[in-house]
Image (cartoon, rainbow, N blue to C red; front, top):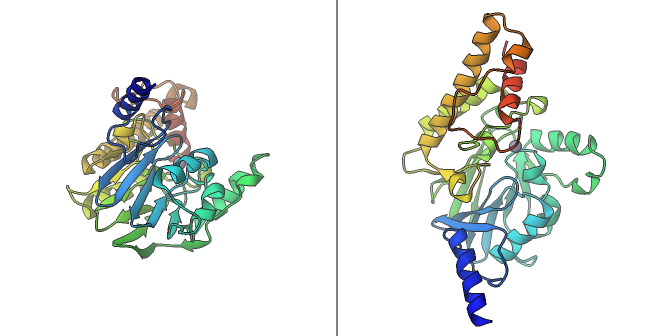
Length: 296
Ligand SMILES: [Zn+2]
């Protein structure tokens, strides 16, 4: 029994990089917790990457994933209802970032988001039967920036304008110099572009350029999505790569339109970036469709 436990524990730890915790050692741990810098880290399981700050019982959470994975987060960070997180932040309205609000609300003093987030989230929930239970919305909203101090960390969120959706914000843990980018970055994979939910490709490019000019080489970034725990964090170089990809997507589709190509022909354009992968089947075609819809 002992050696079997030890083996599984070692295997689980090897699979998760640098985990913060190692309880449940005899089960396959379905999630990954990585401490990045100072008291800031990530939780990776299903849905958008969660960012967290945790120091001596004071905590802040960025994004909520789903109710079942949010329960794992609570377990991993040892959150309690008696000592709630000072803030749960929703970077945007998508269900894989907000559905866990329903579980996390009892562990959070307030839920903060850009003012468009509850509006878009309500539309999303009302359009899908069976999602009514997930109607837990930010109670504190802002239009441009929002700041708070949690423990020894100063946290500032910024909304630059429409990008991935109409209500994205990024969250800067200033002391640690870690920025949660929400879904403005799908790292090394094709992005989801929510043109029904207020996305704007050209403005998205502009926001990334502004972020490149604002933060430093030393800034560590958390990304909403990629295909492994190691790839949901990175540097300003990853922001540049993503901006360049979006610029190329826009010019590819704009040029095709200028040449008089039909939508059907545009949808057959092969990928220009062979290193970029699909998180779901049809992701590249979705990018073409979104660019076709949004651009001139
Ligand atoms: Zn999203």
